[in-house]
Image 1 (cartoon, rainbow, N blue to C red):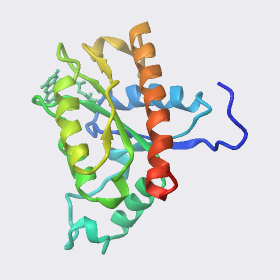
Image 2 (image 1 turned 180 degrees about the vertical axis):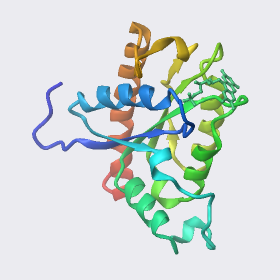
Image 3 (image 1 turned 45 degrees about the vertical axis):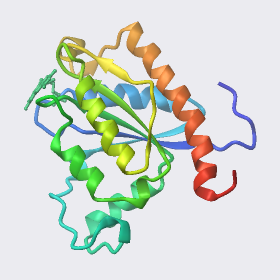
Length: 197
Ligand SMILES: Cc1cc2nc3c(=O)[nH]c(=O)nc-3n(C[C@H](O)[C@H](O)[C@H](O)COP(=O)(O)O)c2cc1C
């Protein structure tokens, strides 16, 4: 894709929600982040919640006040602040997204606002769609824009070989739709945040 000379790439952060040993989530996220890195509209970053290792929410003040007392909160705040759009790569645990993802969302408030959020979900027959739907409610509450297109991956364990996610054509096409919608909305929402619309 050709970039307009005056249009800088936007920062797209792919968040790995699964933190368990033996997870497939990192493989799925690496695939998506690689796709994003090949797209001139974005600068692609990955945040792995296992590596970020946030404790259970331990700030004394409501996040909206931004009166952070912990270095891990300030570090997480800087990452989210610097991002223009997010892709949450989430498994489905008992019909929902995993607890570390909710914890990571709860830590911050203003940093999430007026930014688009997409979901890449996976699981068994349900393809993680219930996790994505529940996640959309939470991100909307944080004043993010949950976009319509998603990547939904059923029976994910059969698609990971040697630690690599092997996408089908349907997953590649869905990823393209997600990136297109994120590019459109992130550009406009950046102007909204800066008051330049
Ligand atoms: C605690 C737990 C609950 C699960 N619940 C669901 C579920 O509700 N729906 C589903 O499709 N798969 C469920 N699974 C299967 C997961 O989709 C599968 O294990 C997947 O690999 C988990 O992602 P991860 O490997 O990245 O952690 C569950 C797995 C675990 C460990």
